[in-house]
Length: 209
Image (cartoon, rainbow, N blue to C red; front, side, top):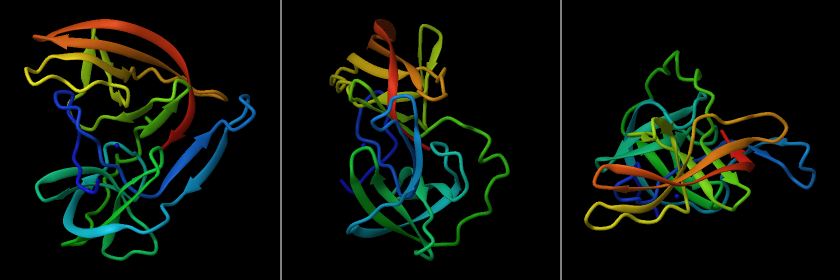
């Protein structure tokens, strides 16, 4: 979820590129409790790139997180870091263990939107079945009239003819509390027709916001 990256669409299932500093909730050894801690990327970064950030992130609804453009590709989210000036961090993915790269800004960051922290949906979730589900920031799929704003890592690549035999995602009705739970939907898309293949109610092991 390489050092190049863009917003993933359902049609091609290419990898998302996600960034930097983040917060995580983990269940740990005791399934009745969650641990909340802040994590920052560590290690060597890939070669820096240049670009601009034009608006607040859609994927992560908290201050200091941005939606940026580099080489005509959209990257969301990108994170400010107190140790960097004139740059943000991208491609650092906590669920997959990638350290990412630094995006050098061609111009200063814009003023944050007042509505940028209103959305409480998390960015990434690792489920009990081992899959990693990531929030979509482009077109959101609809399955039987229900929005599916998350795409999961066990989705299969769509065929060259545009048919998608196996896609997975999460419904928006995330249930918080001591143990987070989600509704995971597996479905296929053929000729504009969406068919539900499986519907599961699963526990969330880790949450990044």
